[in-house]
Image (cartoon, rainbow, N blue to C red; front, side, top):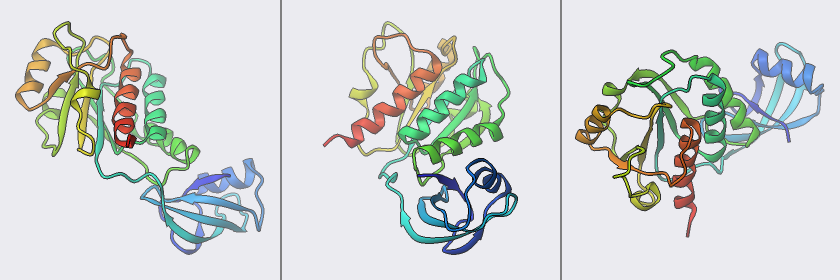
Length: 235
C-alpha cells in the first residue's frame, strides 16, 4: 500500500503538500477514488482517498484515524558523529527509522571527519523510511553540537558510550535494562579519545561493547538501536 506523509493530517478534507501531491499524481499516477495510507509522523495513521488529483495541491479525504503500532514505553536515543561519507550516515538514519528510534543526536568530537550536517536532507531520508516501513512517528534529529556539550545534557535514563577497548568487556545487551530510557554514544571512524571517554564517564556514561566484531560507525549505531529494541520485544 502507498503511504504518504502529511504532518498536518486530520480527519476530513486535507490538501497534500506540493512534494507529496506531485509524487502521488505525477509519479504514481493516482486519480480520484484511489485509496492509500497516510502518516502524520506524530503517532497516527489514516485511511486516505483521493478527491481531487492536482499535481501541486491534491485534495484527499482522511478517515479512520488510529494510533500506529510503533509506540513503546521507553525513550531510545542514539548520538552519532556523522561519517565522512554522507550516504553512510543516511543509511543509519534509514535503518534506525525502520527499526524504531525516538531521537538521533549529531555531534562532533576529536576524531570527527565531518563537522557539518545537512539536517534537512537527513529529515527527508527519515521521512521516506517512515513511509516505507508504515511507521506513524517521525524520529527527531538534533543538529550538530560539540561532544563536551552533548555529554552534559540532562537525560533521565541509562547512558552508554560504545568504546573499542580491551578493558571494556561488558556488552550493551547485558547492561541495558528492559523498559528504561537509553542514550548510546557512537563515535567517529577514529573512535573516541581517552579524554572524551573520561569526560563521558564523569557525566554518568558507562562504557560498553557492541560485540567482538569491529564495526563501522554507522553499523555500530544500527546494532545499538536494534539491540535495545530487541531486548524490549523479548518476552
